[in-house]
Length: 186
Image (cartoon, rainbow, N blue to C red; front, side, top):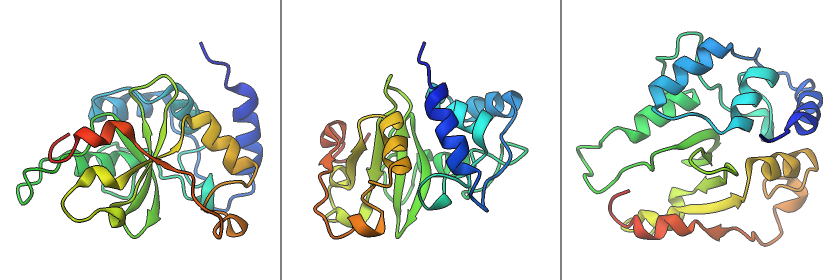
């Protein structure tokens, strides 16, 4: 089992300064949200929501709430975003959101930070639909960080690509290798 407690303590300390910080969710709400999602959250992500807060912290104090008090909510939550994006789109039968990849932060302009809950590390992905050529959705996915723990460390150390003093630097994000086979359907 991973020992995330030292990292969680640093996150709690940093999150305490956020005016947007929400109260943590209950284990019952976490379980209900996971039932709706159809998969379990990465353990560190679950710990963030149950011990730090239900969103309102992290980069730009903008981590999405996992769910409202009743986890059958709209797209302003991670659950709502995932359920909307994972729903079949009748207008584009070639488009499908990858299973187990939870949007956790909306950067704006369609860009989202997402956690791949299927892997042990909880890879953090950047979904950047503005990078596509309109035909190949696989070009919209980048690896922001190989793990959720590293992504949080980057935020805590103010080294993220989104930091004002980092915006002029070259992004070293590489394409998400699993997206290359997703040219038409996940």
